[in-house]
Image 1 (cartoon, protein in one colour):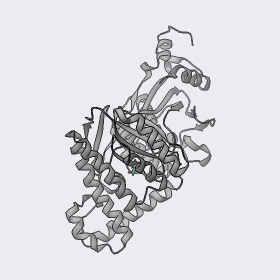
Image 2 (tube, protein in one colour):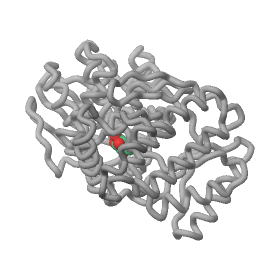
Image 3 (cartoon, helix red, strand yellow):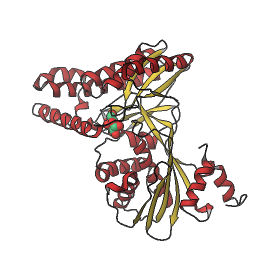
Image 4 (tube, helix red, strand yellow):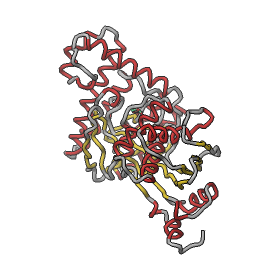
Length: 405
Ligand code: GLA
């Protein structure tokens, strides 16, 4: 963190006391390379953790009080524990509150704590800033009580907090990627079994470029829930003829082709077709990336976007305009929307020497089409959640007693 000392001094204003009691944790955001809207259908996803993310500064307290503050919002929230309740006016603090609730439900005896959040992920961009806050909180509180829960378990508890406390019905992809990410690799995750494999991104001379539409994802939550309901309806209808089917992504393309006609509703048929084909694309994409077939990987990124646009209908004019601009730019091997859709970001695989031209060209075409200016992030894939207390130089030195606090 470039401004670690500055954030530390803001933390100490919020939570005065000995600096050697302070611990700092970092959880990244994530970018999904391919495998969209497959996680809640029991399919595969292929996300990587980012180097951007959320830091949480924590000081345990002797009383059962929980205080939340952030460099991004003026609102501070105090809960006289131990019970946590969702309150709309608590805004961002509902995410860490939900995590504390889920940890308690798991049986953890949590000490009171002051928690202070600082991040560099764009909010509302579909790069999982909320999962990043959740997993950072879960990892930090688990560390304060001795670290008894596995990081994978913390990912699931963070998802539970978002589903049951915040009330957003997300799948497991975001929290899993944020928790378990490995630097330089994407995770091929089976969302039904949670078995996963880290696939090193061997793309010498190429970079992943994330481009933010700068369109807020307005209807995202209601449309997301609508898509989930459509998938459940499609599954229920298919189960009348395939009783053993437990999730859409379990169908191979061949099985799907034989069954598709049972779905009389065209919308349900297209939704299910996206899930089946996207799951197959994801497995094939991981194979191609591992084999160093970057043009083949890029081709699947493009096909994924087309399926999300035409069959799943979660793109919209801004994402489509960005992707079309990218497709036309020399040196770009593939481009697609990433995350839930309806705004947010695209991810593109671009030749390193063409990255600058890519940004100019895409910005020009996108602005002409939408009147909006995009933001670019040329990214590396980073590691998952971890403690970074020793990396906050000022904190370390103050802890050693070398600097007066
Ligand atoms: C959001 C959700 C994820 C996943 C994606 C779509 O990011 O949080 O669980 O469903 O959308 O792939």
